[in-house]
Image (cartoon, rainbow, N blue to C red; front, side):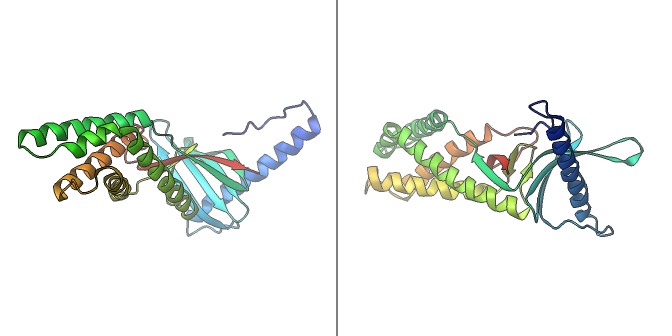
Length: 243
C-alpha cells in the first residue's frame, strides 16, 4: 500500500513536482497531529484520527481523515525530544478489504464441536441428529458464518475509521467490538441452520449448543489472526488510499 516517493521515469521535473507534493502532504500531517494538543493552534481540519502504538518498533502509526482526504503517517521520538515523522500513504478516498478467514478452518471447528456434542448427548441418551446434521453441513454453515462476519466487519471497520476509533497498524485497520457481535452473527447462522435442516427436532438446550458451536468456531478462527499488536481484534481490514 505504501507509495514510493521517487520518480518512476527518470524525469527531473516530475520528480521535483512529486517531491514538492510529498513535502506538502508531510507538512499537512505534522499540522494535523497538532489537533490532539489543545494548547496548539491547528490550521488543518481533522475529522478522525486513528492510531496504534507499535511497541516492537517504538513507533506510532496514524491514519488521519482531514477535510481533503486521508493521510497515513508514522511518528517516533528522537533524541532531544523531537518527534520524527514520515508519511506512508495519502489519498482522497479510502477502500477496505476485510480479513480473509479460512473456511476449512471454520468447518473443522464446527465438526470438532459437533462431535463433542454427540459424545455428550449419547452418554445421557439425548438425540444427536441435530449434531450429525451439523457435521454433514459444516462447510455450508462455515460459509454462512464467514459471510455474516465479513458483512459486519466491513460495516464496523469503515464506521470506526470515519469516527477515528479504529486501531491502525500502518496497513490494517482493526477494532475490538466485543464478543457480543460475534455471538449475534453466530446466533443468526445457527438459527438459519436449524430452520433449514433440523426443524422441530430440537429443544432449547440443543439450540443453545448449536449456537455455542458456531460462535466458538468463528471466534477461534478470528483469534488465529491476532498478534501482539492486535491482541483483542474482532474485525480487521486492509486499507488502500486512492487519489
